[in-house]
Length: 94
Picture 1 (spheres, one colour):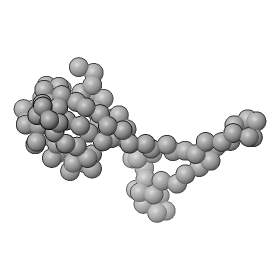
Picture 2 (tube, one colour):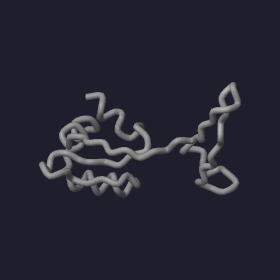
Picture 3 (cartoon, helix red, strand yellow):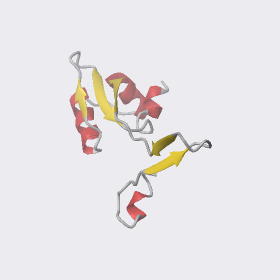
Picture 4 (cartoon, helix red, strand yellow):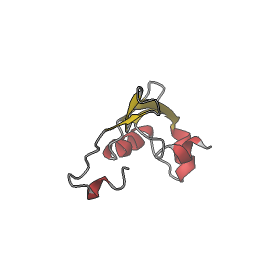
């Protein structure tokens, strides 16, 4: 959905759709795009994608990608607000 939104009549607009169950009584609104917080070790990010950057630099890069992020108190972990797992999936495998 995210990749194709630029081609919609109103670019980057996600329209909600109510989907009814077979009984016609229960419905759910899609897409569900909830934000959640993820904590990822800076060493895992660096080794996972082959870079050697500080926590502050990585947080800055993620924020530029529209992923609100901050360095946690220990200075070695990032707290990242994401709505999908695709950005962090390769890092979380390690």
